[in-house]
Length: 253
Image 1 (cartoon, rainbow, N blue to C red):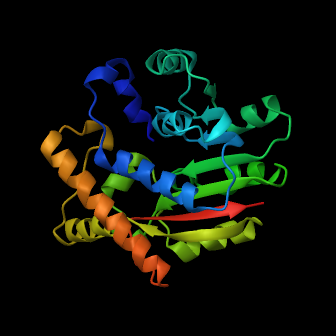
Image 2: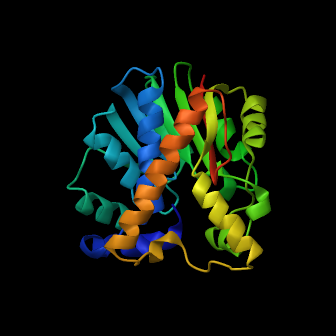
Image 3: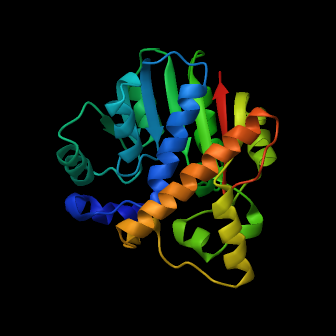
């Protein structure tokens, strides 16, 4: 989640969440439930947690015993507002990964989420080297925007350096000794629309924080993305991988 989105924190009651956010959360939950991971885990750490929406959906479903959220935007003021918004939940907040690693020292099996983070880093190794210092028996879920061919001013607005193919993401993780146990794409329909926007030379100049399309359109897009994802899962079961606007790798070390 991007820094511009923190402006909504003080108006949580009136904020309408973008359907991409809610659908991405559902994608994560599905992949975790399908993985051969014993839940609840000891810990879940969400890197680039933004307004802590995703990690609180995991808290609500008891995916772990301890929860940590990491984001460079977590100033004391932001953390105070997040705690207020989430009823002082058990989530612990850190401003960077190294602060977490130096503070939370005991070794417990941990799931690290790194969703839509790597593309914001000029060098992915900034995070991957630190994660490599962690002990074994950990899981890692990486997700990134897919296909440089649809890179646009919207990516620039969001602070992206690049987009990836699944093979490129796999290569980065292989080089850093992450064992990939599941991989793929999701949101094929959004990739179609993004290619159409590129062809029509339409440029999005707003972040997802500016979503105000109304309940009907929001529900319609949520339904479309749900159907989209279910189709991709069915095809994956018979060995067919179709491209999407995002790609992911679930890893173990």
